[in-house]
Image (cartoon, helix red, strand yellow):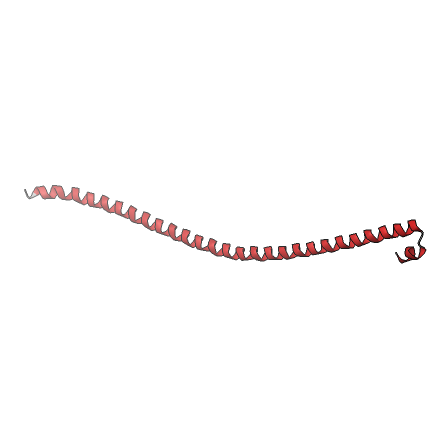
Length: 108
């Protein structure tokens, strides 16, 4: 009976060695997963930071574009007013020409 525990002991030792190897693999996988999650977290934070920065840039550019649009609309309206005045003056000149009014022709 004394020899029997010796025969069982090497089998237990190899099982504990395999179990240790499985534990090591699981431990390395856990560490790798933790590192990958940490990298993903930092990358996500960086993306949020960049998005906030570019969002502010987009808002500034949109405000500038709106300002230019308002300015161009104002210039367009002014040009249409000048065009209307020119057309009216021309029509009055044509009327003065048809009427033979030399004084109005000189004025226009």
